[in-house]
Image 1 (cartoon, rainbow, N blue to C red):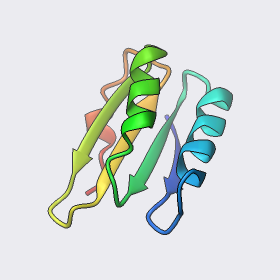
Image 2: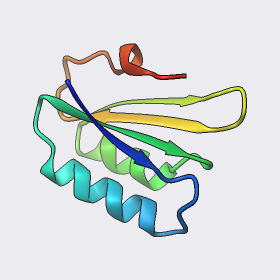
Image 3: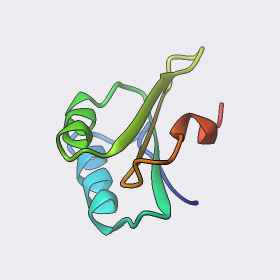
Image 4: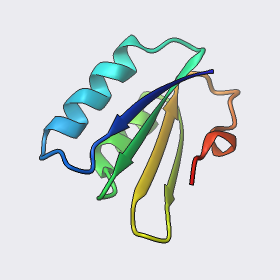
Length: 83
């Protein structure tokens, strides 16, 4: 699986969502988006749900959010969590 990393911790709204959507549009079934964010990106999560993408969300001990999204519904995204 190809990891598309998007570190949005220093970005201001709406840049993280805009970049994440750009990546989601261009992804294939052999890649996944790995977003790191200081906030829980609720709009992105809702879009992933609406589009029937596989997604996994995790808040680490430092309060950093790890969001993994893929078009491949058979992938276990939790296995790719990097914390």
